[in-house]
Image 1 (cartoon, one colour):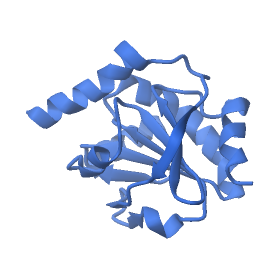
Image 2 (cartoon, rainbow, N blue to C red):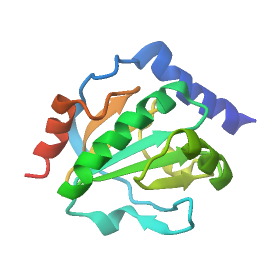
Image 3 (cartoon, one colour):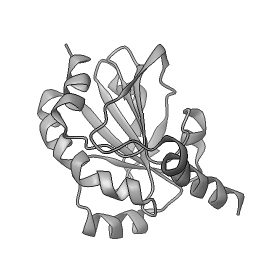
Image 4 (cartoon, helix red, strand yellow):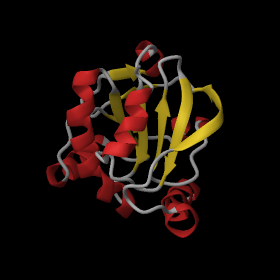
Amino acid sequence: MSRLLLLACLCLLPLLAFAQQPGAGLTRLPDPAPAPDFALADIDGNVFRLSAHRGRVLVINFWATWCPPCRDEMPSMQRAWEQLEAEGILLLGINVGEDEDTIFQFTADYPVDFPLLLDRDSRVIGQWAVRGLPTTYVVDPAGRIVFRAVGSREWDDPELLAQVRALAR
């Protein structure tokens, strides 16, 4: 029950206090901290370890299927992934608290090609400073969290993508 309440609050907080209009940019963090490492399985059971991708720019999105702003931004995340993948920038969706079947059903309505990882026990979201769902972090090639976005975005917005791409140079 408490986990369900926590997840509901995580989804509502951006709507109530931190929501930004789609297309808003990223917030640069003044003191970039190392991104907490994790190992999570995707919906096919393949394990993804964050530290194995050091040297790349990573866009890490925490989301849930029941979160309306999360659903709203998924199509633009897919469009961004279609641009960024060829540039070596990795986009990850970390689903919080749900199982493979739920994610599989979700992707029938919101098809995506980027990796969707499962944080079933909310352990990873607890290691990151997530204030609400969706929350997205951008990690630089040195493994530091440089940008944060709380609330939905239009991830294929050219200005937003320029901020992400600048880290790869």
